[in-house]
Length: 267
Image (tube, rainbow, N blue to C red; front, side):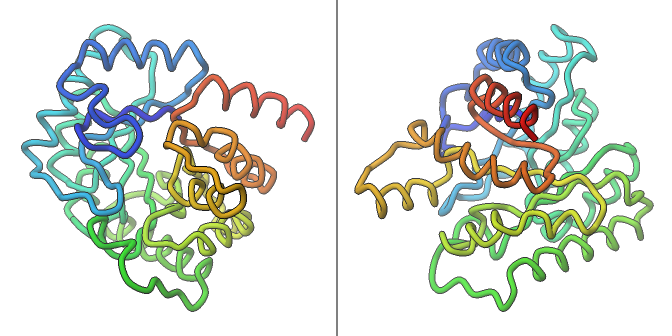
């Protein structure tokens, strides 16, 4: 799954494709050539400390890009819209997206479940403790992080089923970096197989994340920009893939594709 942020403020590629649908579509074409199976489009940054934007602004950012992708590439690409807002999801699905990738599942907008049921599309739910603006502030506590995330998944599936969503429409993402410390992120990576117990596809997204930068700083005294963390990202990806995860969400398509090709051949 290739990441395409059409925001001015995302932590890695913020501003690069903001308000420029033509450039965004060229990036999508490049990602597909490099081996992406999914394109995940986000219009609101969820980096730590980020401010929430209105649904109207988010729609203005993502819909022109999705429409242009569909116009130029027809139905030959799977598009997910990274949003928790029902209004944004509805507009994106009408424009041509076919999956919703939702921060917190239905926690922040239960009307999203009605939209998923109406469109019969896939829903990726990714875990968060707190909200993006404050999720990394103060003491972050879990009693049993793996159990709490699995409980969250079960809760979201139950809400979805009440609205008519089928269990097989769900994809699960433990939400690396969303209200977690470095140690808690590593605990998730070491126990990725525990999320497979729900017998649904599992997605992992570690690409360029700040906890990797913290590890490199602690271990090597190395300051890294987000784009300099690819090798670190692949280390966690390898451990997750060996435990059976199904989808890797990344900024670095070609490098990850080469890496996974050899890893899967060996496995």
